[in-house]
Length: 410
Ligand code: 0X9
Ligand code: ZN
Image (cartoon, rainbow, N blue to C red):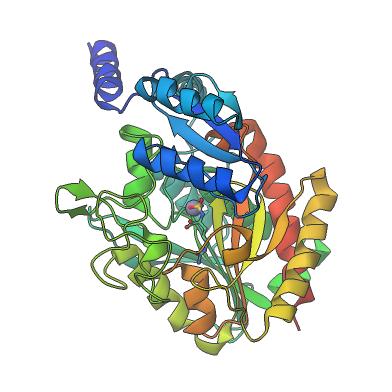
């Protein structure tokens, strides 16, 4: 009886989830500015979900394309002789395979980097590390989401009574970027298991406290597990659609270029700056650190970028050279681990203008001199559906980069 109920619940979950049956990921490589403009126009017209938007001409642009839109889009590309290839032939198949992998992996209160974890599992894991390392770990709730979920921060400190300089790291502000919360779990594991056994980690933890928000957008993250694997925003309803893009909701040129005032858009900036529980939580937790906060890192995927402010304008921050220097050291250390290449520089030049982002706010308003937005693996072979086998190497290289950045600060 219980078994058939379980099957029924499983079928119900599958039946209500958004299906990506027959969807493909196409990568388009425009060779000129004119081609870029044509591709953008066609994609907007067809209402395609554009997954990447690199600034450089000749860099690949990835699109998620629904089956009913293939013909028109491919016809357009062929007609204009614009290069493209199919990166993923059946998106739903990949989602299903990864879901099956999760079903066989066990949820527990210990770190497990072989699989992605749903929200409840992550909260269990955070509880577990808290009880395993009571002298290093304390949790606090920085806010409560629209659906009533806790937005948690894990504070890691080896002592000092809250007087030490602090490093802020947040993951999962965008729901579908699963390798991001997985990487925050990796970092928490390194800090706790490394303290007292790894000399570099021990020295770093005797110098800095870490404040880590593992799932910044819990409602959105839960929704990617139970309803739509490729959901990006939070889940607050606005005028018939759902969700604000939390990374357009900060008070850093709010509503400026690279944002949308349409609640149905994936880059909807929300009704006003800091209208969202998630952005309020980041703001309040970061401001509570005051001048102790030395570095702010916000972790996204994908494209392999290590980015400095600004996203809202092409102007560069006053200390750009210093932020760029440290980013370069971070990227060298990252690449040294598995050979993964990262591009680094200011957001507006590396990707696109995007206003209301958290790292711009961290630099301008919180006054944090090292403010980085990272885009982890990969460059589009899997995109947001990065296989769980890549959690460990991604964690290893990202953590090497972050440690090098911290140690390179002046
Ligand atoms: O567009 C974004 O929010 C980020 N890219 S993503 O594909 N992960 O959505 C880039 C964030 C850059 N940061 C700022 N614009 N401040
Ligand atoms: Zn993102």
